Length: 431
Image (cartoon, rainbow, N blue to C red; front, side):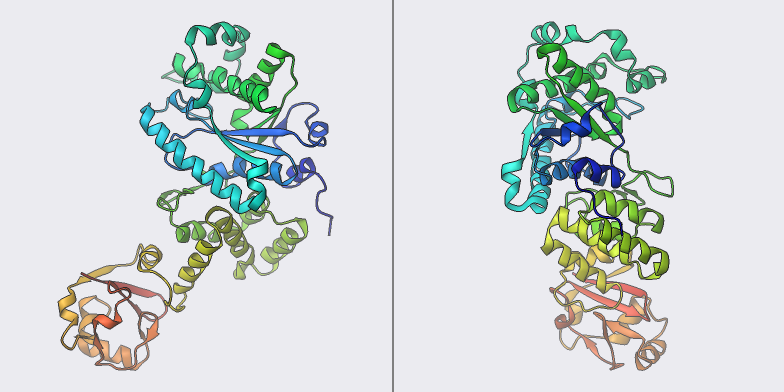
């Protein structure tokens, strides 16, 4: 096997994360330490899996001995970045953006802490550009910053050209976004010694504008590096599923659903995703690549990917819960699995409501419940299913064809999981 990369630049190249960089960036990164940043605008309450490439790029910077700054765009989100957008973003209130910024700040800190441990505080910082953009005076900004940007230069940027060519065009508000992002780079350079900006490939023009502003204002030298925009083999947008976006916030995408998203990765995508989204080295990933080629039915690479990314984003305790919940789908024990997790596991499974009083005073006979839920068409069929070993109650095989179902059979007093055969599940929610 080939040896693992020995420098951050080599590692980014091997992992397929080096899409574009400024001249001399490789030699620049060989000097330690440097301070680099990446921005995240709080246009929603949560980051999503598409943001993970940039977030992990920052953490890789810190793990390599450099200093990383995650910049939450509480100020720039008031404007809206036109990069990669076909139409203008809807305007959000200052209160909504501030609330989103606080939630995203917490998410970034959690991922950094999971990845870096005690080193997170010393080498990874989170800032909010509302700190300096919120009070800036328009005349001062136009005089001191705007004079360094020609309209010709801004019109030449791909994101601007694309929007100008569209039916709706681009507002002056979004047109100025490039200057604000460039100003962020200048402020971070002057206040914190930041000399590197990273981001998705759609940010290349904005990053170059910032490096150029630093050169014009104080003669400083700054670099930019961008990651590729992640796609999947099916040609659909990464992070989008039939049920919607996969978020980092556990309240919006449960750790179980998050784990399942990665577990369901296509064989064609799993090796690139292992490179993008995990800390595994070349020997481990090459071994998993071999497993995909020789034993695809075992989905070994997908399991490792799901474990690594879920642990990074949600921590080891939530990973353990997600794995226990996943085992339920294959008949595993329900012990220790919460009702909320089970409802997530069986989100698409049919459900029947039953009043609690019907389970009291001797209980509701199992054949009656099987007929009521549609698992059996008659009590006779229900009894035959039980005698044949084809019915499970809470993933335990039922042996008594006339067993009463009582409140003691309810998980947390709220739920009963019925299963016919290997895959036919039905939930009974006790009200």
